Image 1 (tube, helix red, strand yellow):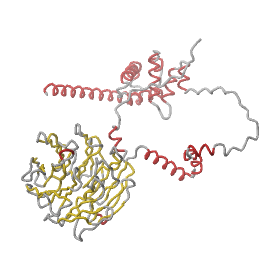
Image 2 (tube, one colour):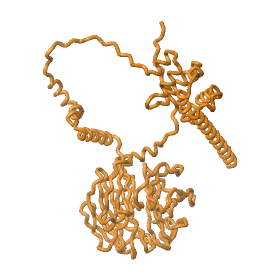
Image 3 (tube, helix red, strand yellow):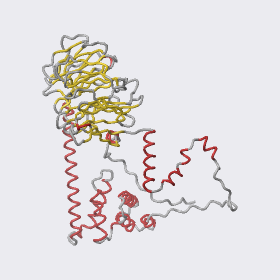
Image 4 (cartoon, one colour):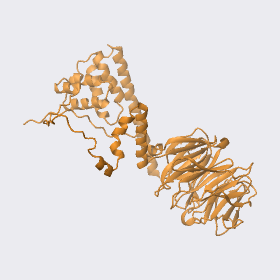
Length: 533
């Protein structure tokens, strides 16, 4: 018994290089942008969220002007505002503790204040610094220990139970604008960056001098320890230095920004580093090889940023960016159940706008009911039948109508099959390629290309010119081009349109050959370099 003749299946080409990487797709999933203006359009100088905590909190703090705003990470709404600073004072470095109960901040007056996040009451005030305090950080090991850096060139350690600083570190020769505790078992170490162009490592077990100093060519704007506890990033001018504390030297210098880098933050459980600069760009680096894996552009110079996490797995939830213009940008990444809820909400809003809300509610009525309620209501709308029910036999399935080019191919009308595929609107290159492969396998390419005039020859040549460069089927397209030129070489000069297409095909082939030669030359250079190294 003869087998049934099936429709010609379109070929499946191997996937080419992706236009967008998985990393870029991940960071582009931070959507639903929300721009929040700060009061009096003061620049957003600091964003604080305690990451990698055992008990996740759902608030983050934003410092702007003479106030600290506390936002909810669940709904991105303003929860509280702390503005208990002096009339002429400007707040700096508002840092929320990892339990979310207290906030510490410095100011231009040199004072440091600790606030209760619930009542906004002032719990503690220190006035030892003689100049503005720019950085305040809580210890990752002890809830009552914190550090501060100031324009008076000093770094101080504090304890909430004490009325004075417990330790003072001197050694910087200019303003100290950044600092942080080292994580993990090295929490007794602190890294600070100064305008004297140095990054210094301090040990709280000794206060005589810095245990390590890294010299740079420009003032230090930000420092960021990695979770390993042995690496520190330092932003200096438009560069980011990767400092290895074990080797006591910089192991990498990242030069991806055009202007000064002002902010650094960790993301994706410490495997990514996010940087922002005065050029308005946000760059994301992979910490394994320090390559830029994604980026985005903002309308104003960036002064601060933070990746806000959620859940016990510390999944990236919000990308918060503070700008010179006074705008706070929040972009949110939805995943899991939240993503499903957002999709259903969008469908409901679309149905409401189109006037189909009743139909939408009727379709989703069963989804909204619980399983127990569905069992109780089962059959409640049954009203009986007014006529007998007739069960008919299964109807024979209707045969799917074949495309015209497939019908012509079955009738051995090869030229007509190719013409029909080229004339489709919109034209599908896979269909044309499928027919060319079928014709080649049947040794019918010459029959399909023979006897063409000026009108029927143009679509074939235009398709070849457009798709000749695709490496996935360059062997076939080169063979068809060569066959076509051999068959119609004697007709060159009889039609201006065909002559122009031949010239275009020649130029395309020549460009591909030159590109191939350049690639081979580059490959040879790389092989020589690899051999030398």
